[in-house]
Image (cartoon, rainbow, N blue to C red; front, side):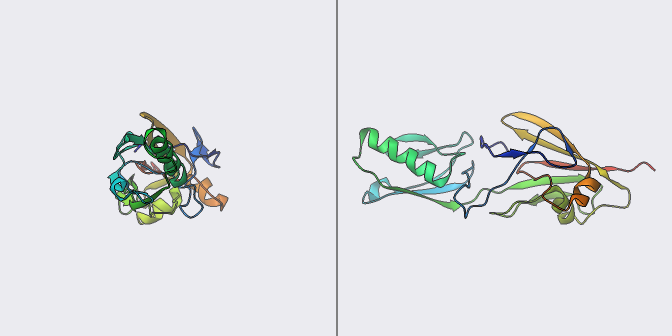
Length: 193
């Protein structure tokens, strides 16, 4: 699921390909709004401008007076500032806007191949998940799994990227490993010996 969101990128031990995105918590104010989330926009002392809207796939919401506004990929503060600027342009002198998340988007990924319980799983809201934790959620490796051959397919901004990971190396590193992003498809390969 591509969100048009830019995250800080950093290299990951045991991974080949493009560096992964790092998930960010809501508490520190850097959480970025994503498509399918529902936001409530409140304008101080302007009850008729209060709106609850779902963010569209293109990152926009429809609001009274100003119409379509891009909030996807922005922090809550940035979204509020964008809406304030649009209202200030033609309608209000000093708008005070607050944006709250009424409903988080489902953050799902799929894990297939040689794991005990292949299927679709959800990344908990306000948390991040690495590929080793994802394998754990799926019950761990099967006897015929090859943990050193994990493939992650990720679609970002309309382009599919494939990452080849060594799960043994990632597990040994004992530190932050390859982060799972919503929409990822993880496949654990089979061992042929």
